[in-house]
Image 1: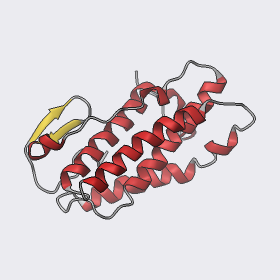
Image 2: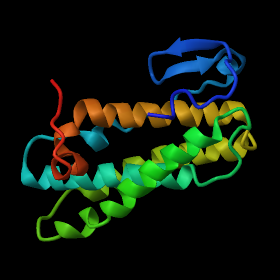
Image 3: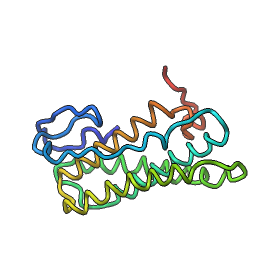
Image 4: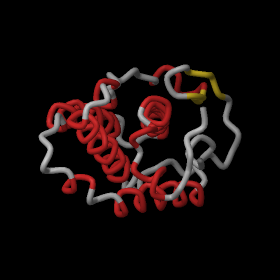
Length: 171
């Protein structure tokens, strides 16, 4: 995954258990956002599974929108950013049908969507408030990694691309 090491230079990092390594020069701006873990929870019922799949898709779509912004730090490796954006974009485009395919089953997506909207709005607001500074982008990077990592660890049975492409989940 290209996102964790997207820097061209080697800055000094501190380890943050919420999202990996974080640059020392940004530690005073490292804010903890309210992570919407319950948006990615499942109890195994068909209704919840549909809502969860929609939530995963929505999170990917929101990540895609965040990273459409061209104000990312110059210190980040543009090729890695482009690769990451292309992967997320492709997943969003290939799985757009997730939102429509299961309308026959009533689901809990609207509750999950409220949580995701608030979380991603918090990231977008941070970027605006900090005028798209490199440290604000580091918070967004950290939170993006946190989100993707949480989905992989806690909801990978519901990822739409694993079954279609024949990948098996490692245990």
